[in-house]
Length: 323
Length: 110
Image 1: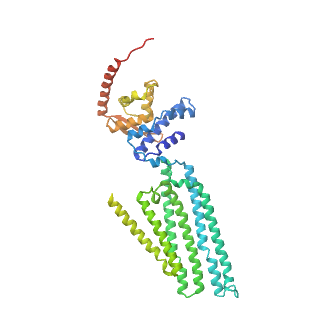
Image 2: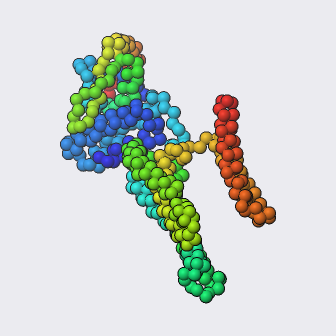
Image 3: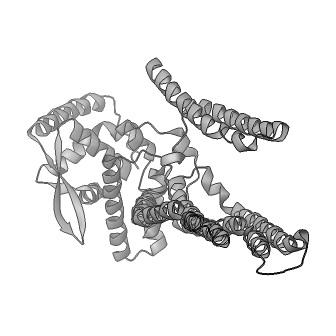
C-alpha cells in the first residue's frame, strides 16, 4: 500500500503544493487504492496488484499540461528525501547544537580559574608568598586546556555532522513530510521562545553580582560577581545555541525565514555586507595595534551596523522603485 | 488495445455517458469503462482526472463530496444541463464521423 502512496508522493513532489493539486492527488490515491484492494480480492498477489495499479496510472505530464502547471525547475532538480533521512538530520543537528553549546560555554568559562586564583591571591586569601607569575600559572593552564577542549569539540562535531550537510543544500520534501515538519516547528515554537526569553533575561541580569559588590565596595565580592556573570552568560549562550540550532534545522528544511531561496539583490547585499564587516574588523585591529586605541576602536562595529542597516534599507527601496 | 490517439476526442463523451444515470466517482467510472468495453479499453488515472478537470472547468460536470466511506471523503461528479447538451452534440458528431469514416473502411474477409 505504501508503495502506491510513495509513488504518487514522488511524482507530485516537483509540482506546486496548491490545494487543488493536493485534492487531485488524494482523489487519485483513493482511486488507485480501491483498484488495488479489488485486485487483491480477485486473488492477485501484492506485487501483481501494485504492478497493475502503477502501470494503469498513466503519465503525469498529461495532468501537468491539462492543469497548465508551471513546474519550478529548481524544486524538480532537488533530491527527494525520506522521513528517515529528515529524522536523522534533525537528531544530528540537535546533537551538534549541544556540542557547540558546550564548547562555547567552555570558552566563556575558561578565564574563571585565572580570575579567581589571581584575585584571591591578591587579596591574600590563598597562595601567600608566591610570585605573581607563579600564581597565574594554574589559571593560564586551565584557560588553555579549556580552549583546546572546546576546539576539539568544535572539530569533532563539525566532522560528525559533515555526512548530513547535503541536507542543507536544499531538498525536496514529500507533501506529508513537509506538513509534519511544519507541525513539529509549530510545536517547538513555545519552547524556543521560552529559551530566548530566559536567555535574554539572564543576560540582562548577569552583571547584578558585580554591581551589588561594587556598591558595597567589596573587591573580592566583585571577583565572585565576575565569575557569576560569566556563568550566567555561559548558560544563556548555551540556551541560545541549542534552541537556535533545532529551530534552524526546521527553517533550513522548509526553506523559510533566513533560508528562503535567495533573490538576486540578496546576493548584492551579502557581498557588500561581507566587505563592510571585514573592513570594520580591519579598521578595529589597525587602530588597536598601531595607535593603541583599543578603548575606543570598538565603536567601528556599532557604526558599521548602523551603516549596514542604512544601506540595506536604501538598497531595497531603490530596487523596489525600479521594478 | 486501442491507441490513445484515436480515442482521445471521446474520453469526455465516455465519462459523460457514465454520468447520465446518476452521480459517480473516479474508481467506479474507470471500473465501468473497463467492464463495458470488456477490458478492451482501460482509462489511465491521469487521463481520467485530466478529463474531470477539463469537464468541470467547462461546466459540463460538477463535483461534490459524497458520504465518507472508511473515513475517506469521496469526490462525486454529476452531469450538468450544459454537459448533457454537449454530450448530445458529441453523439451526433460521432454518428457523422462514423458514417464518413465507414465509407473508407474495407472489410477483409479471408
